[in-house]
Image (cartoon, rainbow, N blue to C red; front, top):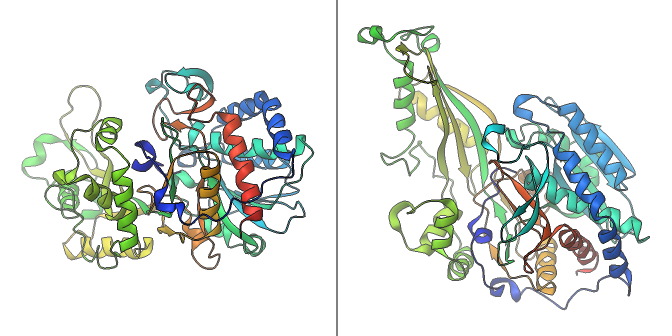
Length: 506
């Protein structure tokens, strides 16, 4: 998923007071002996489950590089069939394909599951363990982990969910709910064609039967705590491009830098365009109308954030991020309010001219800025892109190209939705400290599920731990040495418990 970081799962959260009042009597789990049999099956299948994740990591599908996309979809289909899905089909799009599958266990309720089979790019030179080797290494304070691109984002948690389905079958038990699986291969480029998958008539009809949709996660902190998120920010990913060719005033190809005395620079033009987008310190978006649809935090959202602030450590977050200060040096609760409620304009990368060793005296003909913008309710991707284009045009930057690669709107799920209450019930019964949080500062394409025509609650769920999404040495714990954090078998059983809870919760 895009940037799956959240402070409430990175810092020490100390309780579930914010959500405890929502919990009714504990839902019945399996019949006597069922859960024990499933756990034994999960333990017996541990080696196979680890290998399944490793093999999947060794086949990277990278949409940005058009690498192994068909192969990734075919492999996702194979994984679904092996896990017991009876109907599995590849779904074509105008981009890379997705996968749609159903598992009808004859249960009364249906549950939607979202998978992604693509991963982020990587540079092997930055890794201490080869990113496609999926080596098992020791992680101090956590235990044995699979290190590899996609291990926590998302193949490890998804592998744990698949392991749960294998364990049900190996134990001879039926699933308590029926499943609809929707998988895509473009999440890491902003899911530009995911709506085409979800809105196909047969896929939409299947989803309409579901209680909600979850994406498997493994977000436990070192103290075992986890958060239940009621939404996520949206995102827009794009490039801004300034070129002499489009501008008509700079060079159409790189020229000697001595000519800067008489020739204008597309690189400086891009810098000027970028500076118009934000305040002088770079911290506040200044795009015309950017905030006009932003919905302020509600009283309940402020209450949840205050509870998280009281239960977490500002110092721990700074240490985990490697920063010494947050914007404005505001009180901790105000910092968390900004994280949940502030839309952003961020420069992911800047590229122009020569960037190798030493100098090269050229005047570049082209400059590119990679941008992401995070959106909060009630902003939308399309409206935000239109505002950006209009803002540039009004300031004389009509020649600066806006090339959108992907993105989607924010998500919101009601606090009393069954999938939210089921998560809380499982965590509480498992003795896992948890809090409610208004929304992730990061993004995932759940808006396709929460908005019309699907209109379902959607969120994340899962025990276990991993880190390093989008970064070198990404890992997922499979054998935990920390009694408060689940390994692969414990993560697997969390999904077993969640499915039982969804089958019985009122």
